[in-house]
Length: 607
Ligand code: AGP
Image 1 (cartoon, rainbow, N blue to C red):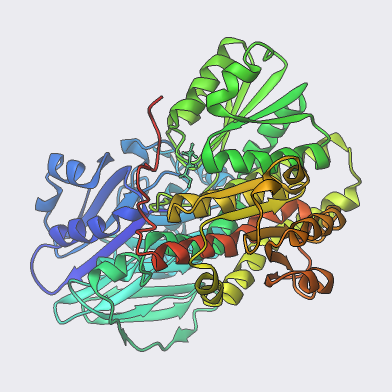
Image 2: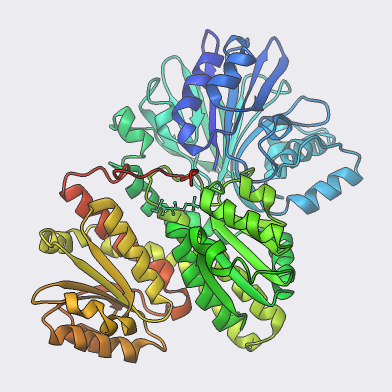
């Protein structure tokens, strides 16, 4: 995820506004920054890796001349956070400047085609191909706008773009497909940005671009057309009533809630893994005798779930390990034929990096899944996958958890296909349903976004919660419990349901709420048995189950209904969502700040 800001002023210098706009978009990522401005027909680009204020001041970017310009704050997806990969990117002649938020999936083939036509590239990004594509189209002696439109039709993937060039020096060309872009109009000028928060100090009159739209802005206003056929789109300006603070969170009261709601989008992003990397990790995994999935906290819960995916689908012996325990527990048995797959959204968790050090010392193969390009984990892994969730600001992991799961599921399925341990039909079926997971989450949010409040009201006074699940749902139970515990500080337990009768059941007395995860699948019969055991001891049963599951409904006090058709092995992704909401709303009800739970840090980089 990156931030885009562009502006055309009637008078004055635009650079300080770009700086201010990007600061408001800093939450979208901040590993590099760059501006391009136009003055007296010449394009100036300044950019570097580093924080916004630091780079702007060291390159004196506030002083760049011109009333028209674009700026970008980057959160790396392709290519490390280095100057050469910072946006804007330009064509061979340095006359077309492009800033981009999103991922161009077919950039490798386009790059090869352009190299064969004589273009030379400076960066490792997917974005740079856009500048060269436009340059190539302009050789056909067409105008800049038309060349951009032609180029857009060749792009696959997601983008929000702003393009600036002396070939048409009074305009900024914008386009959107799956990444957000909004235009704004004031008496002083016209703006484009990744979200309204960036332009709110200057205007509250905005128009949102939709997927597949192209817009040309100049100092008089904007013109929108459809990319596909160039047909005009009439869309009126609307007035935004948000305060600045609300706008940063896109109208949500907390980052955590915003991130919960971002999950359909972040999951779609995580389904766009680069095949070459997926293939490489699969090949390395296939060589292993055993697989250790190593992580801390929420990421460990992803590993617990993934251990079921790898052993059920790919039939690979898999051990989830808490990273701080890894050396003690498995350190002396790890060897050259062990694979360590470390999972860490930050890529900087001390305990996880320590476990990796040890595994590397013993010549094991270390692989990684992380959300942070350029993190230590990416440097110490033999190969890694970037989960593409976008930055997560709330301390409690939500969208990074579900993204980790969908990445690990893709890996397990790919390995299953390679190893041929389950039938091709089954793999095809899982793959098809995996693609539907973002929609299952969307549906869940629509259903429970508001409705969960009634359940929160009913159980707000409880002093203890118990979470139980069987099979892969025991991982969902662990994560749901962690969310509740860290946000509300209410003591709670989570166990595989079958284990509860070996001890935890003694805590159950009249009225204790027990939350059961009950997706349809192999474990459903057993979970019904566990519910009956708890009921017999007076527990109040809250079940998360498939819509229309009459048997579970009849034995539960409350139910949280989930969409039909979710296979059990993928169920942790949608099933955790209503429980993230439950923890969030309960924290709010208790007057706690869900974005900053006490005693916790987003990334734990100490022993
Ligand atoms: C969960 O809400 C926490 N943020 C925490 O458990 C976190 O998952 C853990 O510290 C691991 O972080 P990582 O994914 O960055 O390694």
